[in-house]
Amino acid sequence: MSRITLMAKDAEGMREATDAEVVAAARAVLGRRFRRGAALTSPAIARDYLAMKYALHEREVFVAIWLDTRHRVLGHTELFHGTIDGASVHPREVVKEALRQNASACLISHNHPSAVGEPSRADEAITLRLKAALELVDIRLVDHLITAGGTCVSLAERGIL
Image (cartoon, rainbow, N blue to C red; front, side):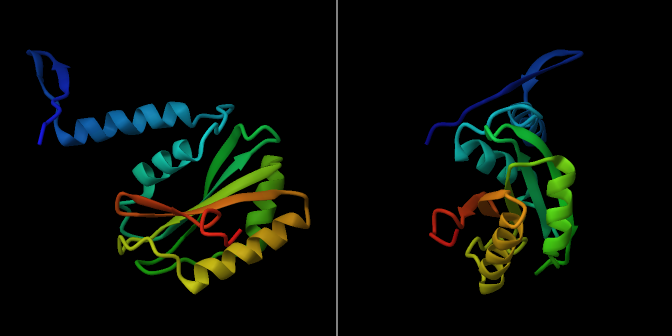
């Protein structure tokens, strides 16, 4: 198996980059691709960003990415923080923030600290509740992504949305 070596520059010259430096650089690149006004041209951009940012958190974090009519990023909000195995999600608060962001669409995501990406019945139920609540104010729920370890599962691709 081949190994890729990335280099870093410091006061003494060039040296092999540490794993932490590589991850930090990847986060910076994904962050630039995910800044306000950037178009989500493919699901892979959102997956990569969310997997890198939330996959290794010790507690559940429920986030929303707010989009305009052309699916350009308006913002990114961590809405709810939970425990190692769950977070309480309140549709009223999601709708309130969506209106504050003036979003036309959104993508929601949460992580599974267990590193098991399989959606639970509760994940499916909250997805449908949020979809219905957002539809009342003409905001489209594009997807619900679950990050776990290095993977990202799409509930839209599973036919739940």
